Length: 133
Image (tube, helix red, strand yellow):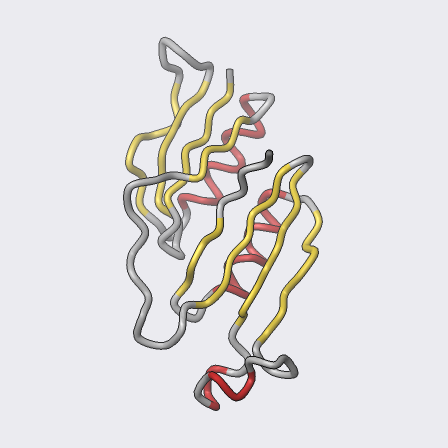
């Protein structure tokens, strides 16, 4: 079994996934707009270029997402995407990028359980936890 986060956006999925790809690396496997799909006629004309499915693979797990239908987006709450990073400098680089334009909930710092741990909500509203053991 594999568990992969699926993120919803209010029209910024393409921008967010390009940012995540740039920040986290991995392989951007899919960026499928409604346009040209069987769903094209199910969304308003101004929404056809919005993303109905995006997929970024990172090692043996993936991050997926899409734009919500117009008027249905809700701010994410009650979870965080947790990243386990192998070294402190990489943890700091990723945290700084994800926190830029967002909100730091807990600064990235040494804790009794990790060399570095921090929490932030990025500019797209996605909550993240970065940990380096």
